[in-house]
Length: 350
Ligand code: NAD
Ligand code: IPM
Ligand code: MN
Image (cartoon, rainbow, N blue to C red; front, side, top):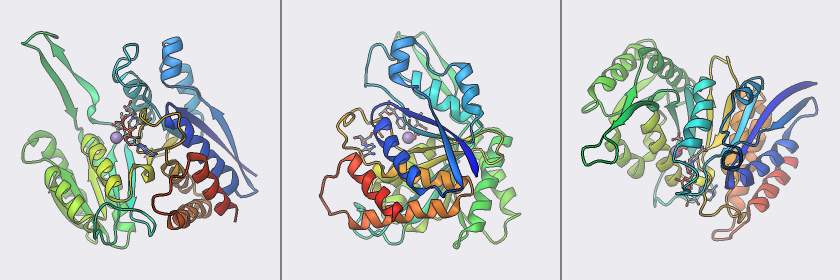
């Protein structure tokens, strides 16, 4: 029997609600010879407000000893005076992504037969965004001068290293090579962000030379948003920086059936630390505590996690159950979070 150590960080708001359903599905999909040993870590707004702790070093080191991490979402009530903006986002979520070297933030988007796209005629949409996960404007480089005065100057410096860009671009090419359409689009803003743009452009061209079978395309981020809404079917693999990738993937979720379906993996492809799987969405304070959130994104994140662990059959079972469930959802029917979890778990159980 194979035993896998799973760190579970349900987090805040709907994060805890959707994670419960994801674990429900994980429980029923496991083959008899694989055992998950989950450890739950209560991190997030509640812990911070009670103790001032965000992610103690000792907890980070414990989490690092796991095979894989499942996360719900973090983020407290908006404008809570006791919870400064970014404390949890930077101190918990981004710290995990950076410390565990999650340089590939994988965010697939597909229109399943049962997805309700707001587009009249989206076509066959099946693409994956490879979002850089450890650099860009997310690194916290920058500062503020003369804070609070009319002369205030604030900067957020985008960090783009040749090492960091090349490794994510390589991953995206390898991924495109494995897909039937073998197409990779670089999305950036090389016409304005010329320093960062030139390193992305140069390394994209260099690695492209090693992948003659992969067809390449380039779009500026603004134009990419046009195509994401008018013709999302044109995309196969997209590679982009951390901030563009964040924004693109919320739009991608919206056009392919909603943020409640969008799954993601924060992947360390070198396997020097555990990868982390989580829905693209946040803690949704506007609907938290009402069991209204769609847990499908969290459940599809479990499928990505199983795939990452080489448990391909189990991964496919979960995905197939989600697809079947989506196809059977009555339009307009408001299912609760546990109802959706139960339906998918029941399908997985067969
Ligand atoms: P959000 O994704 O939490 O919510 C945006 C909108 O989508 C809301 O109207 C919400 O109700 C809806 N929504 C989100 N998930 C849904 C689901 N599963 N089913 C149905 N509706 C869903 O984004 P936000 O409001 O910008 O952020 C709220 C908090 O979450 C902030 O503190 C933010 O920093 C944090 N956040 C965390 C993560 C993460 O932990 N990975 C991701 C995004 C945002
Ligand atoms: C996401 C979130 C995070 C991001 C925030 C909460 C730090 O929006 O996972 O998409 O910007 O990466
Ligand atoms: Mn986001």
